[in-house]
Length: 130
Image 1: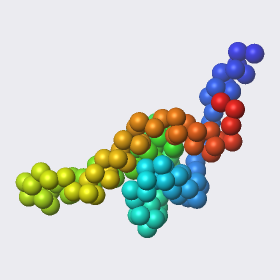
Image 2 (image 1 turned 90 degrees about the vertical axis):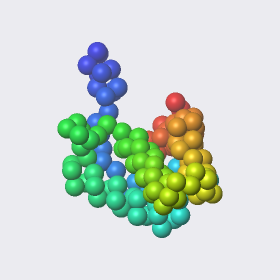
Image 3 (image 1 turned 135 degrees about the vertical axis):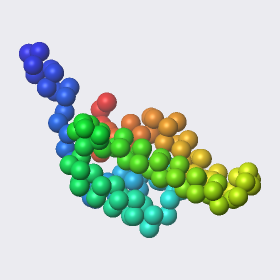
Image 4 (image 1 turned 180 degrees about the vertical axis):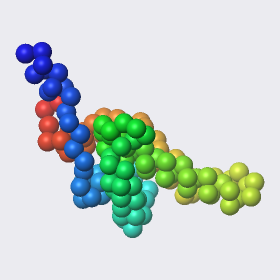
């Protein structure tokens, strides 16, 4: 019985399809008030999928455990890199641009809206009762 409980708790990782990745990114972007354009989401989803597909869905040396979390991190890093580019082009100007404010809102949604993200994960896993 103990083995059955442990095996139920440890779900095997199943790599997402490209459509899974794109749809999850679109859903997260909707929660974040569409910070990214649709074209940008397509680019990010292709980059994410191709990167992890090419390395066998491994993070460092460990097999990926949660591709939803990996996508949230990927998009968050994309926001960070864009913010760094904005700042480097401002040449010392500390004025926050409208785009930077949108990116800040997106980051806030990614990390502060755990209930909505859990709902999305439940929806994607087909488990509506948890």
